[in-house]
Length: 321
Image 1: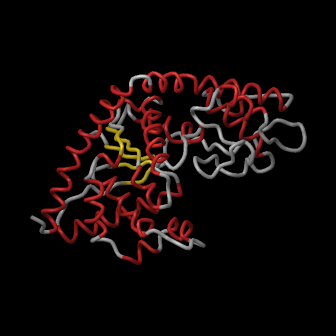
Image 2: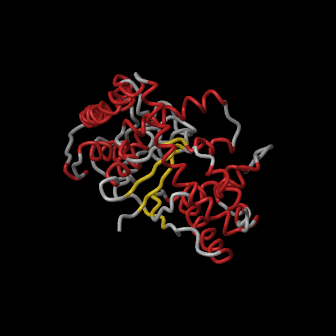
Image 3: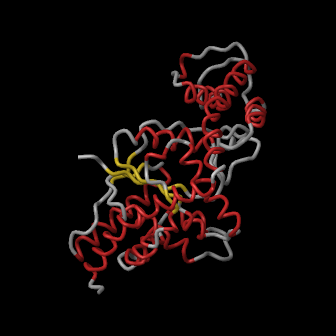
């Protein structure tokens, strides 16, 4: 039986090369073997202070990029366009316990030292659980930092099923089959991130080719001149070799260079060639806003139809008319 997969991308920053190689490409490949659904989780961005106009723009950009990257065979939609997400989130909040929400690692980290902490930061794991359970997902591809959220989702699904009857599919967290870990080009011991990475060290999917080449040619390397893959001793060089391997499909051990400059040049060319089709398809989609709207709304309508059945089942199970 075909497994159903769900994953979401939060539009708190612009999608990067790290997102593409580490999460999006594996998601594209997964479409060949699973029933996949992907969302842009704009509701999750409300857990912190935000600019409405920027959120709207970033959400549309992210949705368009996911389609441009090859997720057009899946149901890519914007989360807030499917109200069932928030309705089921409240039903799950009514199943969750305050203590387990407060113990979530991300809540502890993001609330630490803040003068004002939004209540949604505490409760949004219930929304994340709703995202997954709405689609009766079997598998949820996640990084290690999100594994705890999937474990909470499993706990809530099992508790709900025990209290009110079998309603939800209990999902399983899985690591992507190919998850290239891309580090910041300026700080190669830190992950390349959407919102917390350095500008000089972060390659965004829509960066101009000249900017991509400049960032890679200025990437921080290491002492000495030997080019070898050794993340502990040579994090900068190892990051460039990993980038080259991910973009060319060759094993990292197959590369041999006599200088850092030659490695950087090849890495820069490989990255720009990898991103060229994405930029081209993004331009095509953006050139026809009406067609893009029709595509996204169609995906949202299909997601809403599926989700309505799950919410109705949950409401009946809890005794709601």
